[in-house]
Image 1 (spheres, protein in one colour):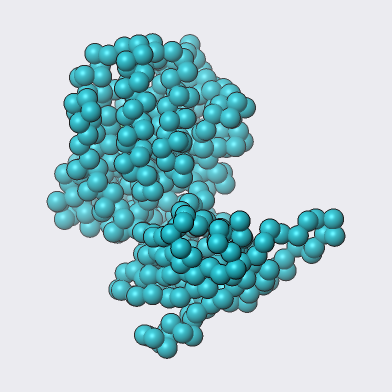
Image 2 (cartoon, helix red, strand yellow):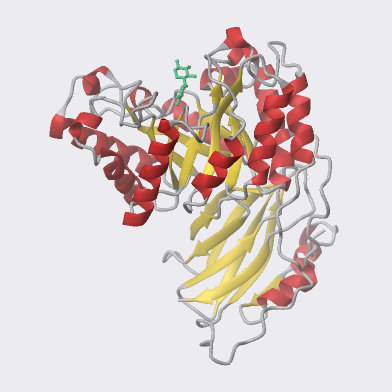
Amino acid sequence: MANSSRAPGRSRRLRTALVVSAAVGLLATAGAVVLPGSASAASTLGASAAERGRYFGTAVAVSRLNDSAYTTILNREFNQVTAENEMKIDALQPNQGQFNYGNADRLVQHARNQGMQVRGHTLAWHSQQPGWMQNMSGTTLRNAMLNHVTQVATHFRGQIAWWDVVNEAFQDGSSGARRDSNLQRTGNDWIEAAFRAARQADPNAQLCYNDYNIDNWNDAKTQAVYRMVQDFKSRGVPIDCVGLQSHFTGGSNYPSNYRTTLSSFAALGVDVHITELDIRNAPSDAYRNVVNDCLAVARCKGITVWGIRDSDSWRSNESPLLFNGSGQKKPAYDAVLAALNSGTPPPTGNPTTPPPTGNPTTPPPAGSCTATVTPGQVWGDRYNTSVTVSGASTWSVVVAITAPQRVSSTWSGSFSWDGSGNIMTVRSNGSGNTFGFTTMMNGNSSARPQIRSCTAG
Ligand code: XIL
């Protein structure tokens, strides 16, 4: 129960104040921390995935947030969301230069209130373009596309964990070629140009290439996307992840080499995400296999299903989701939860392991600083923490959050997260030496953030 006593109020705050300096950070943390124990049987998809350092999310149609049956399941089960349509180009920029963020912002706010991570979908795509863009070509289109990427990624900066920067740019079938589209006709480098613009606009978001029919390792399309990612990595094009939509609907099936595909992409040095999962008739076996395959690949960061109830699905006639139209759990739900629960929690750092012994030839660590935690206000579902740094005016502090807890808002620092969302790096951003953040408890009311290190400079 992390370094906290349970007494409320001011005395508790004083007793739980924690001072860790960089030099003794590991040891001090080690003494104070109780890490999550062995695999437990979490009772929701999101909580179970979080215990394994992952997320379990869903596509959300913002209009359905008014349906309480829908929202009850969403808030209970999922810790990640993707806008089903509301962050597409036609939704965000219906007329050139006129941006319409209302529905997307509503989803981001909902996610924030619930401590859910948001996948942005999607900045550049041949489909769901507004009419004005469909009619463009050449340099005019290229510039309009880059402007869209820049404006949208800037608007959502700090709120989006992963962007699908480019969606569906390859052809199906045996050609391994790019898909023909107005964007492709602006030049083969349109994809990397989009990634570069996105990185510049939101340096903390993870940038993904997303596609369907790249699940079977033997498919020409899979191989072609693999070669593009390999090329991007070798040339320093900023790409962090590959999203496999994994629509096993509309005639495409779960392939037995799916795990090979996930691990092969991961071996290129990118994370992999299963971004739009749905499976015709929701067979428990295929759903279980997808979860097991993701859990077997360390860089598989999470799974998003493409809707909550069958009645919400874009392919509702195939009943491909985990809840039926009445919101009841289907057998596939039980299979997914059981598979998640039997997965091994990720290594969390062993509190009894001493820090590596100093190597006399290794230069001393960069200047040290001291990070002092002051617990803040506590509500039923969340709590605030502030951290004051002394000993340096520019610094970087690493803070570990115990899953399923999630940071939902931040202030007075520049915040970034590792792929699991549990390790947060906070850099000074010129707004003083005290930063703060709100953490959603998500069912764990006792854990508290742990300082891992404080580095000056
Ligand atoms: C679909 C939505 O689910 C539908 O509501 C919409 O009419 C069309 O788009 N690949 C994608 C998603 O990347 O954006 C698509 O979503 C499904 C296929």
